[in-house]
Image (cartoon, rainbow, N blue to C red; front, side):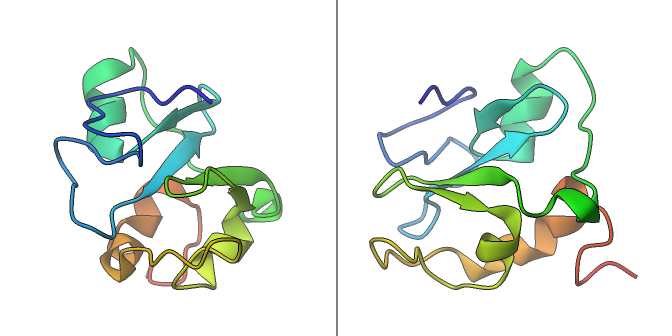
Length: 108
């Protein structure tokens, strides 16, 4: 699976987000490419981010950097760790849901 952007290791961390828990990559709806974060997309893609609509939250669009299992958006939004390998995800990523997902839980 190709990961685009400023990736710094084989667990999908990037120059922007590289803590122990920053191990997911997001498939962007606009280009069908995995990036570690929205900043990587902004810096490396030649187009704007298109958010995933709520009716497509069952799409495989999240990649666990630890075991490389793909998760649906719905699975990812409702778990603190990978259901396959149990690696912990960064809970603060939820703050960015409105960038990636339409009508995300914390969006007003």
